[in-house]
Length: 536
Image (cartoon, rainbow, N blue to C red; front, side):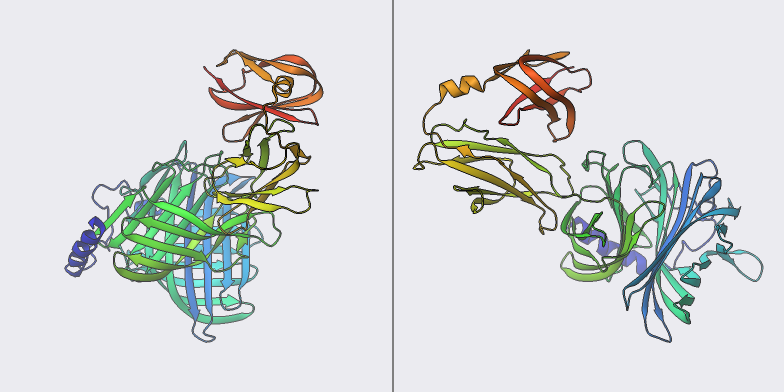
């Protein structure tokens, strides 16, 4: 309801004002960004880039095209930075990426004026237009770029006021990075495009981003970013960042979106949900990105879907950059739209390890089956199926499907004591693109009575509990050449000792932070597992 009222109120304001923002100098109230100065270069900041994406239509062929160009100023390898230029023929699906290092003979500090000298000899520019008196025309530009595959020469005119990310144009991104950040969300473009030897006039719509600070996409946390232009006139800049442990903390440093409503109204928030409903592997199967996303905030409910599965950039690092379709609702109004996705986070098949049961320790009329996801990823929730074979492990039947816990209790009342069985755990993403398996590997045995002798034989005692500097491990049997591993609660491998023999050892804990861990001992015939806690 709050969002609907804002939309209605903003529409009234919009109808009563005539672009009061389209002047230089211009600085929105409360903003840390001013124009045209902050469209220019900031030499005091370690990283800066100017970005534009867009869709264009050829006047001669009627073809649809998309493009993305980024100029990065981040000195490395003797160059001032690098330029990325992607061209795509949306009619045929052909994709032409190019990344080249470059120098910047000119980077003006008081307005947008980029002159780039590319490795290989081409010169490119992106500058603010001048009127007949040599004065800057507010928020209008000319872009000239050339790659091995094609070229662009575009006149660009912003039709909407700047969208200031996080309301002020300054945001924290990730654990230790910051960025000054604004978007120009609707740019009318006209000019010429050359691709595959054909040159034609084009027109279309673009989106501009400008960031400067210490956030570096090549070294900071991986992210997923979207620019969306909706049919009701709203525009959304959405991103989420992943920690090194593949989590997305629930705060504005890691999840954020800003929405342009009209020239007088915009808002920012971090309390949205972004679920991935489809994934796709690239052609070499080495990286997998989200393909379809479900975004929900207040009365905004959108489904975002990338159009092509091949639009991946390989330099200076691998990431996906391509056009999206948008469908959904804003309040009670159906909306459609288009956008761009920039995806740096890659997803892996789930790695699953069976923990319990271990051979000969099932008891009474039920068995607790426990497993571990060794590579959890908040962007890839995993569902599990448990399968059992009561013969030679070649014919499995499903016991339970679609559970999300990593523990399940199997009631085997009526199964003859001593019966061998095999287990298989299947884990998969919501669309089953990402899949993983864990097998018992050797037969387990059903016992419908307490096996106190066997329990003592397999007993593992840990002390002190909780532990601090050392953890003592005493076994109920002597093991020979056993592997000892410690995992944290998220399944990350923390410690390994190979070829241990004996029945007692002392493990140093100085490399472990406070928390809960699993100790696993594998002697090739059975696996023993215990949980313990470290205090600091």
